[in-house]
Length: 241
Ligand code: BTN
Image 1: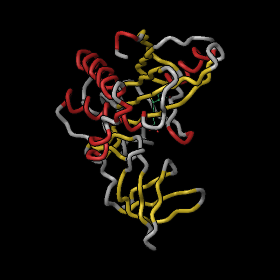
Image 2 (image 1 turned 30 degrees about the vertical axis):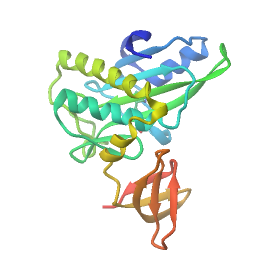
Image 3 (image 1 turned 45 degrees about the vertical axis):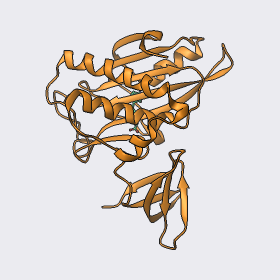
Image 4 (image 1 turned 135 degrees about the vertical axis):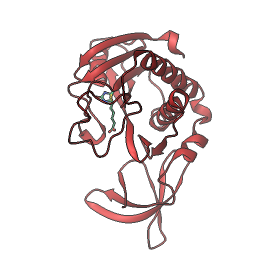
């Protein structure tokens, strides 16, 4: 698959680009489509959190045919990180599993979701990417201003178009070799959580552990003080200060 297989739809403001695609699929749309918005009024993040989506950011969702889902989130993080480097020359790092960081602050988040199509009777995959491309006119809102960072200070339409194009190309470059896990080496190298002490939250329990590795399924291997190890699929990991 590549960029030319996809219809690209541009919107000024939408509730959520992921929700927009979900609605299309539920209405019977199954064609490959990418939707890009300048702002979202109900942007969603992982764990049912909201994702503040001010103007200046890039909000993009890709509707993919039914495919292997587990590795898409980390793969997308590598595509985002590569794109940032190619467009700005800035180096980013990845925080397992779905966040891209620049100078210790969050630049981008990824939300992959499945949606069942009543037309084809199959689950489709939606890959949602949110990235703080330019600083919002009125700065970041109070809730995120200490933890978020933008890639550029001032808006530049030409840069934005180049960024979108490069991001989509990078996405399909890795997507087309997903079965060979061609993104994995970079994913490991870019992660900044390895060898750090983390708080692992499973259910209501918080336990300290060391992040020791990322395995071939992109699970985070953590080691607890008693020497035992656990492979985390999701659950939450907080970097200990
Ligand atoms: C996270 O950091 O928790 C994930 C954030 C994902 C945000 C993107 S923006 C485009 C797409 N639409 C949404 O509502 N969410 C994703």
